[in-house]
Image 1 (cartoon, rainbow over the protein chains, first blue to last red):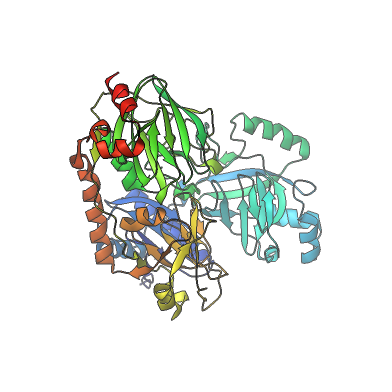
Image 2: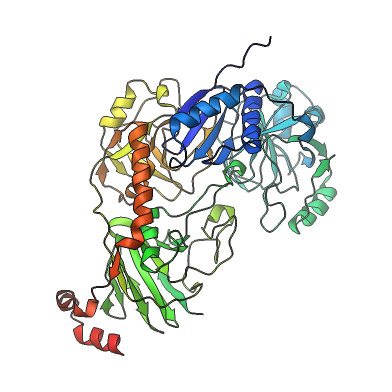
Length: 243
Length: 334
């Protein structure tokens, strides 16, 4: 017999949302259980649940209190979170995302390499060698937080966050890696830029990545970046969906 | 098609509706009206769907010119309003003639007013909504706050009579909250949070209302691993001063959330003016959800609260105050 999964914490986020918490820190097992519950809810919807928001450690479940009450929904989510579900590995999407590393594209690459006692080439190799999982998308549209960073690339966040970092920034912060879509503030270390838009209006699909997707990176040069960036601006997806 | 031309407008004025849903998992917040009840009241006056898009008008004044005849309704925060010299009563609908100028003053006793158009606003739905989210480049007919020269077209007209609506008087009670999801990060300071008097800071916007008062200490520091947010989440950042998250919020946040404003009190909080003191009060989940259901019932019942307008040109006292009786009568007859 396999020991039953531990119950999640059922926390109220006001009167119309429940936080189903699997852990308090960033850990792979909690993240997997979050994504598994998210998938289970999309495959077998509970009446009254309107939308879900996966994060590293919890699933936020928005619901309509006129259709289902807090206690009943909490019990059903607890049961669903403890149920053994068949592996869904076959249906998970795998993406390859091009990155132009270093120089003006990744202004922190050299400093990161120095801090870690590695060459810039080795930082790029380790970053591009990883199999990442989209653990959550948040902060700003399309900002994709990835789990699966090589532990040797763990770096504390910058002392002072930058107020403006470019669109398409590929960065690392703590044990996390990220794909940023829109320009905006960031306290992470910038390793490169991708021409891929994870959020683009008037393109189908508007949002490229889903929580739970697998992501790998590969290096491109400045000329390829310019070509692909122009194509992406015209609505091309640019990222490769691996069958 | 009839339309409104924006002559002058203050900040924080944008097209809003019920917001968009199903996109928070991609980092896109719902946006939508800060005071959904007031939006629904304006739409009820015009026979529109409850959450049809309308112009959400920030605390400062605004001015519009009608191109073609169109019916509009004003709801939400009270403010002086006149149409080419004749007063437009609050919570009422009225027909603007071609060339009429609608002038709105500064909000009194609230923050956001709603100018709804009969038939709703013409625009391109994105994720089922016209609501403006400037950071994400979303919203229609303009993906940004309104500016002078912008044109807002009505979808259609159905020529209802002038009407007004009587809304329940807003309570002056504390803003009610459900504790959590992370009130255990604060220990005894939860009571201090509930005992304190708070004021809305002037540095507040559609993303969040920053509060001023006594700083609330954390037990274990102010960083938690990011998790999801809702409208009304009360985050306590490093300086200990709460931020209540509003419809343009980040969809995830890394500060502990001590409590969440109940849905039924979100409109009232959104209409709380900067500098005005208020308190929070913790209620049970059962009470919060009972209030949610009561609010939903009120929203559904709004069309039943609409009645024929007490025509402004017969309201002699109001006309006397405005000193424009002759103009108003001739404008109405003409």
